[in-house]
Picture 1 (tube, rainbow, N blue to C red):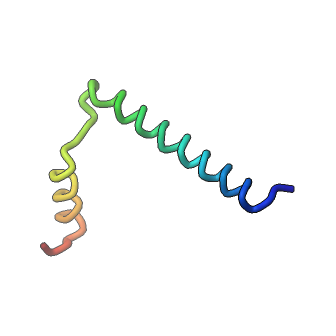
Picture 2: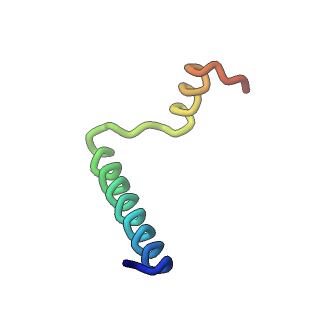
Length: 53
């Protein structure tokens, strides 16, 4: 059994590892042309979901 602080530390480390993996994946996709401009992507979502400005 783990104490609460140790368990929270484990969850924090897991989240950091997952975030790091996502960042590495995103960085690997840039040279492949899989990146998108954030403003354009958000504008596309706004139109798709009919969100007013």
